[in-house]
Length: 198
Image (tube, rainbow, N blue to C red; front, side, top):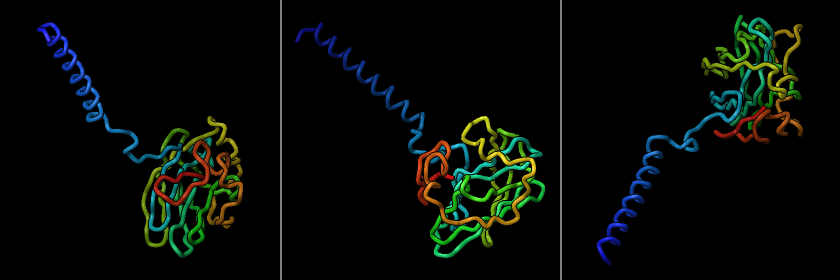
């Protein structure tokens, strides 16, 4: 191998080394999104005692108008549980969830209304979630009918707060479909950290 060939080989090796450093450097500086947990939906997620809340949000036209809470609540315990959501202006909704079951707050479930909603569309509303002796302050996003899938959830002007919701705590067959159970997310949520749904 003559001096010219050795020079070309050295330049090629240097180029490959720089390329490898660039690739590994980007991976080091920018964390992989797949390694981070996040809510792949419009709503928020939270765990409270045995209850797992997924894709929770409020649908409302205005801060002073009624807001409907939608999402999914999973009960991982062997006992029946109750989720209480307290919002702006003292409005409160109580949602029963059967043991080892789930409740989808969708169009097949009695409307869970907070009046007023407490936030304009696009904002985050502080609410208190409670089950048993455990409670926590969280923020639910407020959306309106800008996205067509939420239009059917907009409460009417005459909607009143829900002091107690007595709808079925078990999902119907249609509640697990992508269009009804989980607008914008995958169907058939499971009670795990990655589950979302209505």
